[in-house]
Image (cartoon, rainbow, N blue to C red; front, side, top):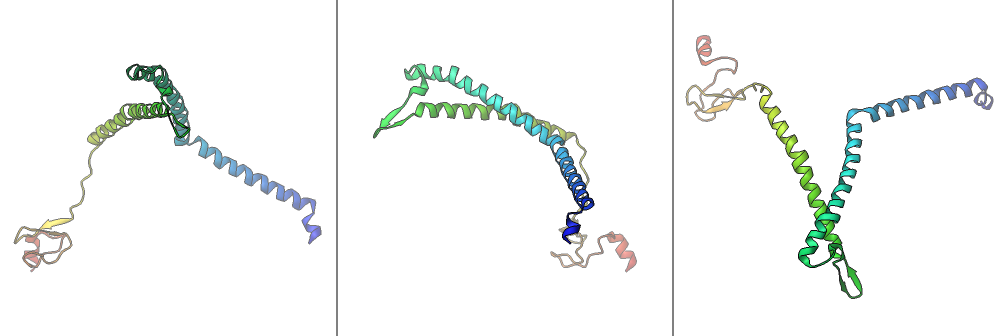
Length: 173
């Protein structure tokens, strides 16, 4: 048994099988990576990170100083209060909130709203499928009953089978 385990032919066979299995796994991984939605997601994350830097710079360099003019501060990030020897920098928190609100507004108005409008337009242009009816009218009381019903729930009249019209049912009686 030990002799078979260390036989050169067996070792080579194990190596080939291991290499082939590894290459198959890498092939599946390559398919996964090159699938369209993974690449789109990666591009979206990179552009989102770059856009976040732009919005942070806009808030820090333009909007915060403008708000600081109304608050009579040189810089909004310098707003802080000290309580029990602890510093609470609420100006920096205000910067982060403004950055979040601007990012959310841009994503909504430039991504979500146009995509929703595109979906609505596509839904209006797409032909609608005719759905099979699930109910039918009772020929006696004109109430709506399920298609497979054999008796009307309202007037208790015997109904013809769903695939027959009332005229066809009268002929077969």
